[in-house]
Length: 152
Image 1: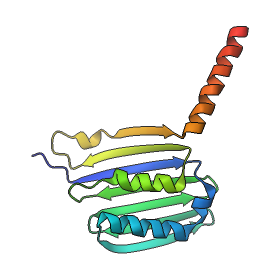
Image 2: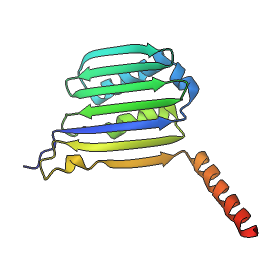
Image 3: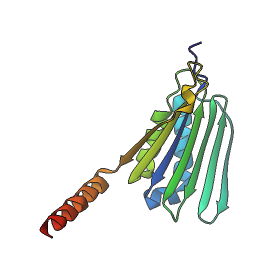
């Protein structure tokens, strides 16, 4: 059997743009547009303010589910996308969210759920991306430390 039942992708976005975290109507508009463009069929949508600093968005669709947790003070966003539609591409949705929140660090975990080819769904692919300026800063700091160490 060569079937994958679903694609499950989670993302952690660190040091996000504060104004994007505060603008819930813009996020709701973006989510609505993304779901419409993808052709998903929405069953239910809910937004909950968990605390002053934490909001959660849930979209339940015929094709899966989509959850976002925003932590404003931490400037952190956690995303969970589970799609069981044939040819689903959670990466495209995630890229739009990444463009919206503009994190300095972005980590994704991708699972092929129901992969009947030998349990591959138990081996997630994890990727971490740093924003270019942060990467330059980190590299510069390493070079300075290396040069300082050589002087001693």
